[in-house]
Length: 385
Image (cartoon, rainbow, N blue to C red; front, side):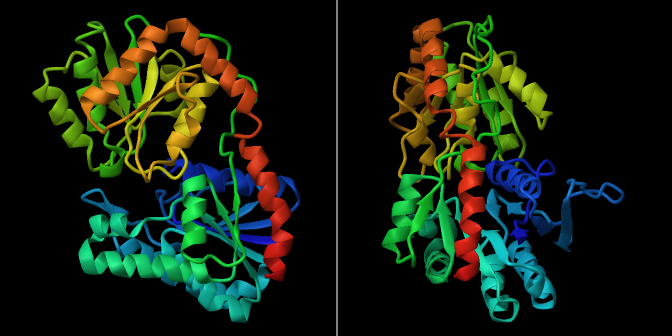
């Protein structure tokens, strides 16, 4: 089949669960014999155009800053949506299926607008489904109502829909998605066997890896380390990533006098993060909002427990079996997260062995390959829709 993937970011030029999902999906579809086109925004420098074997990567918009003050800017999604619309109006007949992320919504609306001419099916990945309350907090009263309405319009479009967590699948059903949603449980591209056992680093080290945007709440890692050091005096931290909250994290480190305790390396190679994660005491992900929580699975694959924070919009909680592969902090506070970190320290090698056992039991279900098989098999019904 002829598949058009639509996402405004491309791994590894930008790093995140969605980026890795679409990169893995593109490579899997090519391996299965499909013809694949990937529409995105420009993220690379001149002369560094991406080369994904067998995949035609087309930039339908220029290089743009996606975030301002931690929130997604409105301009880039609009530009991307216009670029997608132009491409599909001209070339939509080339494709059997257009496979897009629900967010940013303008590109999905563009795919729907061009569908009568292109006569393709539409497949949609719903990584997140925001509540009315979250929309109000994110964009304010009027903006939040507009955002909620656009999200609902997209859910009502004819589509083959996928979600990556139970809570977001249930929200889709609640707002009236037609035809039901299929739950995908895997995004991890690593081996099905846990990595060879590695003892926790000495001194014990907490690791954070992710974008530094407000909903990730990376500064809480600093607060948690400061509090946990009351019980584990030699505890240290490494906070990987980049983004608009970087300065806030660095300022918090200075405020608490942890300059010699917490390292902020910034954006580094995947191999560096993997090595840090392999020997970490635990991985801490204090997000308020996650569509999946891939870092939990990645940590478990190393036999390393993870700490996440309870929250209505945090799907990563679904990946924690309490006391088996980590702990869920009850509140988004340094003290609550510190208690979970100390519990990981107390659990020691026994907790790391339980984490490895949890991963061995769930690896196939959580694998990227399992989800890709489901999606690839579903393109036939998407084309008919």
